[in-house]
Length: 114
Image (tube, rainbow, N blue to C red; front, side, top):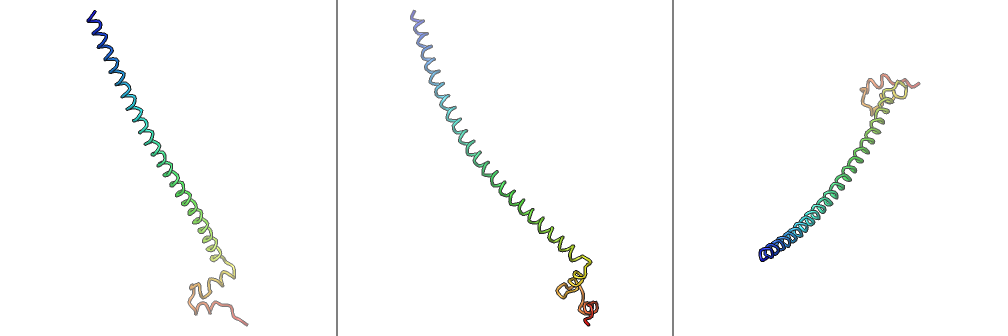
């Protein structure tokens, strides 16, 4: 009978020790999960900021690209006008500011005033 009581006491101590160990392990896991969740939250915040910044940069690049396209279209339109075969364009190409013809050539090709 004494050996049974001794075994019972030993099992009881083992069960209490196991219960304390389980509580300690549960607490450690909860703290670890809490820390991990906090790190994930911070990382998500960082990722959101990075995505927002990248989106703003992309919008800026797209705006600049659209503006360059518009400017390029205007340059092509002006070039088409300057290369046109109309009388007005011939006069503009021969204007003093154009710098295409030398003065003697410009005066030689200018229409005579009567």
